[in-house]
Amino acid sequence: MAAPEPSFTIGIEEEYLLVDLQTRDVASNPPEALFKACQKRIKGVVSREFLKAQIEVNTEISTNVADARNNLAELRTAVVEIAGEYGLAPIAAGTHPFSNWQEQAHTNRQRYNVIAKDLQTVVRRLMTCGMHVHVGIDDDELRIDLLNQVSYFLPHLLAFSTSSPFWRGENTGLKSYRLSVFNELPRTGLPDVFESWPEYQRHVDALVNAGLIEDASKLWWDVRPSQRYPTLEMRITDVCTRIDDAVSIAALFMCILRMLYRLKKSNQRWRQYASMLVEENRWRAQRYGLDEGLVDFGRGEIVPCSTLLGELIDLVGEDADALGCVNEIGHLKTIIKKGTSSHRQLETYAKALNKGASQHDALVKVVDLLIKETRNTG
Image 1 (cartoon, rainbow, N blue to C red):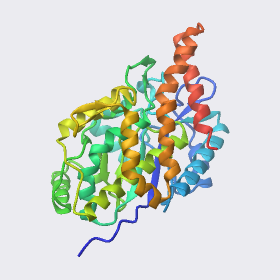
Image 2: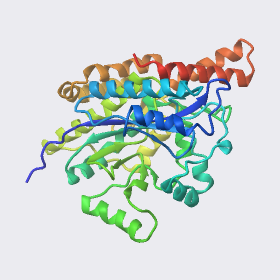
Image 3: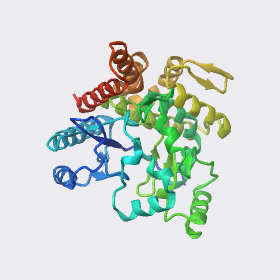
Image 4: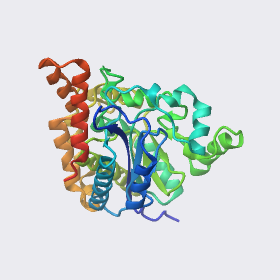
């Protein structure tokens, strides 16, 4: 029997770092009362992350992107207001411009304690924040089929999201240094290709039965079948400082999946490229963001991201219309024109230095920018 059409529901997870409003440094030990206040105000959708200085929000399952945006705006606003009562502020950025990971401690929770013991310094360095997008794909076999095909587009999504050019007070020269840190963990990067859901499950079972992982939630790939929900979970992107950037990228991921599903219904599919080729685009997105283009492997040449976006919009136009997110997809043009958070951070840093600010004071200006843009949910 043919699989039923996917629900294409959407959910967005964002991770934030909490910073001290006086020092602009990461607050290494935010008070427990802050988290309790968040959970009381917005139950079930705010939680601690691996580091004590992090907080995660999760939107409700939404049937359309507009509802997801409204929910995300409520969550951001709540965290901003509650954190402010404790002299703190969340920043939606892949990395903090100048804080040191050595000064951070992980959350005392069973899962995190196990991870800390297992991964040691590799995970202690993980002072990074990402955005994860869940799209409802209810059928197991279809979820694996789309997993295999959507990997091609992951570098495109990363390029639009970059927000981590700095690390420990240095301009890294990368638009997404977060990914360099995250890549040190095991079971990260592009997923393997699986012929079927049972084959995928056999691979997971091999790791579980050997005692290496408890379940598939410790597969930290750039995109994965969610362990908890019947969704495909996109994980490659930096958390976006501006909420509209986040929502447009989430919409693009959802539309790409629907486009691939349409191809499947017509007995077509996206061409499968070797991981070594997709990895090149992944690196280009990590290094350059939108600035130097990505490789179109069909043409065999580097194509500007503005051109690629035009092709993407044409490719998913029918899907954006069906899913009610034409405006959100259109916002990607604004990101091309005005740049990502990484561009604005680097511009703010350069301007401050040109005006005579010290390196540290220039980085403080960057944190100020991140605080302001994160709280702007209008």
